[in-house]
Length: 370
Image 1 (tube, rainbow, N blue to C red):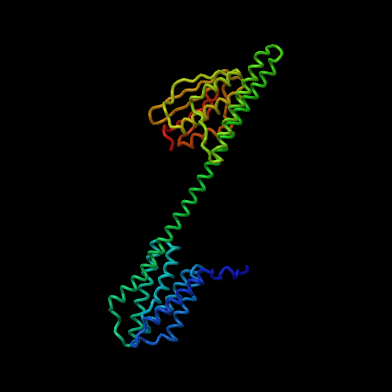
Image 2: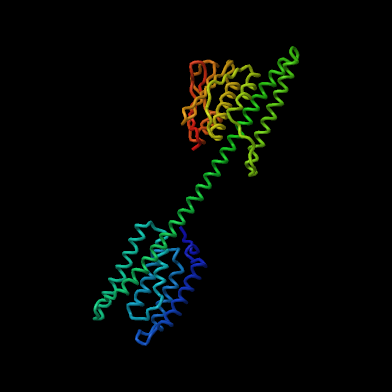
């Protein structure tokens, strides 16, 4: 295994930040130096430059950089150099670590850093024979430097996490919309083509003996094609970010019944779904339409479909049953998956199971889409 050296190169932004901080610290130290301070040149300046250079790798190895910056900056103050802004480098290194850790770990790093700073400072003072520092302002300055790094880093991490969550939600919304449009196209095409195929078969069968019925079948094919094109146009309008046309709803079940009647299947609608919101109304219509289309396509013996609608104020209940004959099991396909997806899209549920006389489709949808 080879080591990619380029992966450890500092970024241009971090190099620029380190250079800027080094220049600011050197200039600030020169301006704040007093005759009573220990000369900051060249020893103090070397520590500042070393800390600035190390900061260039802050995003490559945050914890290691924090430790090295601490080892450069803390001795600068322990040795009595001027109280310049060199501690800003510790704050930046602490911020970088905190922006990548959880709040508890960030606080833990801050506590360890403060304890190390103050503890080693006492050790250095004891070795030089000086009393430990009890300057409250000095201790508060150390606390502020560490706390600012931890707090700002934590806020940055939280902001990054919120942005990532928003992006993930946007991706999910796009995927859900894509699936919804795929269901729409599948429903329109499968239903319309199934009806057209049945009507074309009827027309071809009776063309010689009952031409008037063949003409009626052709007219129904024309009407089904027109309705399919209108629904496809409405769906494509969504892709073009236009206002969609009138969404299909349960009020259009008479069209489904009329088209199914040409295939010899009577559709009886009983009950009422109340006044659900448009999304639920559209989902209920599509569930019924898909169920009736499946009967026409697959239940050759079916002659009657009963659609029961009910509502109790909170839910809309849909039941579609046919008389195509007993079945042992229902084989799942795109249509049946579409039924479940239509129900789930508004926060409801659906099921398809063998019934006493055929197949029974049931769905429970909330009156208000979730």
